Length: 543
Image (cartoon, rainbow, N blue to C red; front, side, top):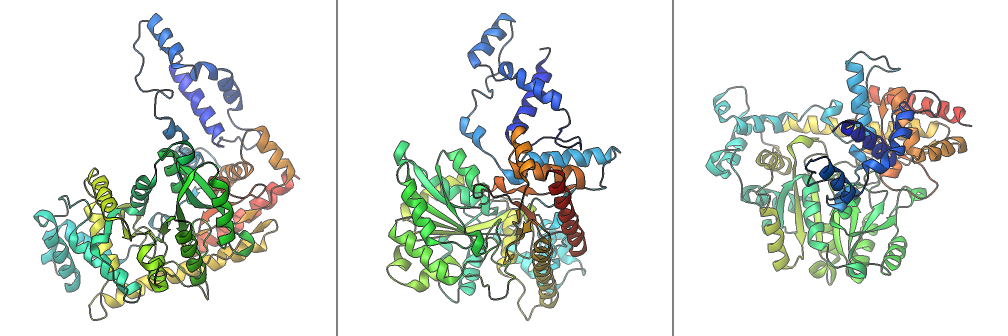
């Protein structure tokens, strides 16, 4: 129909405006295509008309209406938001396209510091991991003299465990048995000899898929009995997005920014008591090391959280994908499984726990292979069977990702030919990340109006920014969150793409952004200095 394309564009403008995203002309406070947005708002009644009205119009025109529309689709999907890949990132992609087309900008490249994608930021893959994967993908290379003997043996071992001795075959839904056994042995080594049962290990498409699966098991009830899940604020938006999709109740507990984003059990009590008036809290999620906040939980804190979960009958989800990424002096990763077992009865034998790990982070940074696992502890046996059934619907995790996970949990031994190079590469990556974490904290804390807690672990900083009242007012006029307004202006004027803190959650009246520390060290230094200068200019403009 004539005008249909225009209506779609109108809705795009409205959708991006509602989500806090708008392209900018560079003039103070004036968005590019603002007239189009105003016009879109005036015509929005037609775009968002009732299905009945649309069908009547279509019948009059002799046309068949679409079965699936914004009005007839699953309403929970419409509620899903994922800030890490949200509208601001879409604008960054548009800017990249404009640069390729020769459009003049005040910058020469877009720096996507919005996501923890190490290799996209220039980190080189670990040689041993890629050698074995290459051999698994193309077994003809097993006769090549270019690969070390131990890499060939590892590839042969993995292929022997695959259906048809091929990485292209399906595996069982819980993952290749050999790899699950290797994961269990890794967990035992990590936790000082505490046993791990491979039957309690399920391989997954990254950690995210396993997290969603466990949350699906937990969500039940209606109205006041609907499942509530306690999640940290700030949080990784996977949790809020999944809870929205499942129709569960998000129960926010706030991390303490004044104490380096510490987790306070008294805050857990507050959130739980408040939530029990309108839902049935059944689970507690902890992200350690923290994303986006970078804190590392102390053993004492973990013990307190376990006691709280036990006393309040909450299922524990421990998101531990950054367990290799601990940088700050005095900080140490403690797995929830290890602490739980060492606490002894009644906790060790009764407290339900699911802990998650991934190949995407750590020193590996192999995000695209989508390898991960979940270990469940004290889960009801019948529920565990239901979990396997749920996983079987999706057949199996990517087998190349399973192979990669096997190499991560069982790296070269000290007697292997590849050990020296593997260790050198691993330590180099982690040492550089530690230097970047320290640099980020230092530069931001030297900038007036920006404060940054120590990046104790993970791959991000979550600095707090002071925004002048004029900027807050202008953002409100445009229907934008103030930190989204700041981040959009930052992107349009510098090419730096970061994610506003409002996408992760923050206390009312505070403003933040999440930025990865992954760019190469010198590039990161320039990025930090450029961002700090922009904040000073932005503050002056709106003061």
